[in-house]
Length: 90
Image 1 (tube, helix red, strand yellow):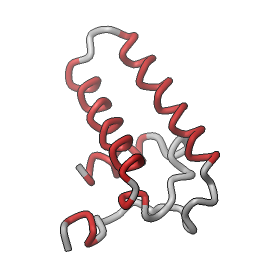
Image 2 (cartoon, rainbow, N blue to C red; image 1 turned 90 degrees about the vertical axis):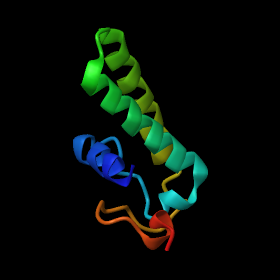
Image 3 (cartoon, rainbow, N blue to C red; image 1 turned 180 degrees about the vertical axis):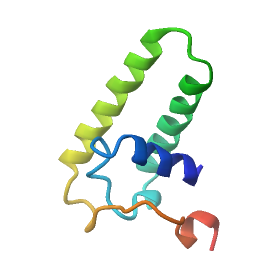
Image 4 (cartoon, rainbow, N blue to C red; image 1 turned 120 degrees about the vertical axis):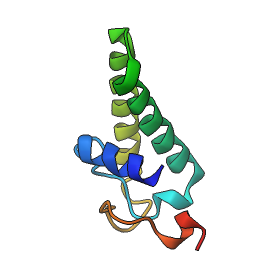
């Protein structure tokens, strides 16, 4: 799932630019990002209704606004890369 979140960030860097290092320690952030990544993959694989695409982008924009509002909650912006030890069970 980490790779899917990295790919989501790569695809939508402007929307996720306020994501901070340590997001994986917050259940709300990790669950939201995993849900968005899974949803994006499902749309890419077999979406047939264009409303799915619109709903996804609406939710992504809503999450981007949430991240902007929480700007100071973590100290540094996240730079996608290898998963931290906490993610892999280290």
